[in-house]
Length: 435
Image (cartoon, rainbow, N blue to C red; front, side, top):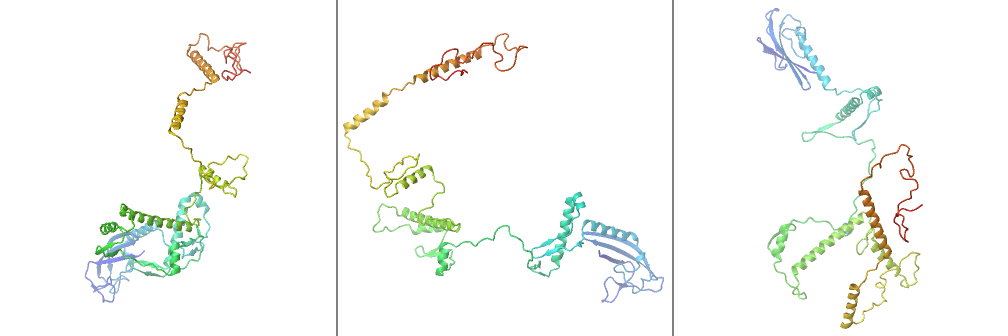
């Protein structure tokens, strides 16, 4: 580390000739025994650390480094007269700085492979597996720091130049071919209008933001809210065409025409977008839906059946195919039946007949179903009464000799009580099934 010495002389001194350094002095020496006092300031500049130390000592003219031509610079002069404590402080400060800030010089067994065009450095040295297993995080950080330092050192070896108060290094062309993650982007396909303009040699002209209006006698913007205000001022009166309806709103008609133009432009934009995405677009109409509903499929099936030469009369049917509906509306030869003429008296009689059928309609009684419901209701009521009765004494206790298994807890010889001993009527499903 560079050490700077600044010397302050307490005695009389005069500077040397202007060609010499400002800190070089010569002193009058009347005899060899002349002594003078010096105050030496030792400043050690180590990175961001500055250490300053002062010392007073005497230099005799009899010293081999003293005299009229002796110079105190870079540690020269009577070094033995300087106390050792100052050099120890400087050495300690230098050592602390080296521990805190790592050196820019990194040693490797094998030199790294560099590709400065892509800022790539490949370390081919073997890893220290022992250190890697013991302290993996620190080892990898140190390795990354050293390799980055070597890469930066190589970059600073390149020729540099200053541009706008910044040092710029021009990188060489890359030599290492890196594979792409995604394919190379394809050029954007041109629209229909762009293709037509290229064929006809039409170039785009930059339009001005305002145009001169001869009616309003002022500059009107081509877009924005002020454009709409100008249109209202300009069209405060619209001349009625000769063949137009006098009751028709010409302002609404003009607005509808503008909306149609906007919709047409938007439709054309969507078609261009579909062409760029390789989507088949019909020349007339709109694109079909990807998934059809059941109703749409039924209509398509009906149309397909009557699209033969015989209008579907001799069309073969599948085993479980249903009869096509509303076929007559699709056939051009089928005439629609007209309803016969009905007199008011006939219409009145028909309405009275429909009303009588609605009011005098008798409900159909299912006797078997009604009986089964009544039996089920009685059984449900009986089971609720049993569940609400308090338990009798002695019940619920387990006997020591009881065997667990099928039918345990019942008296011997008992029968299932599904139907309470009553015979089941035909069609009855309630009660427990006998085995």
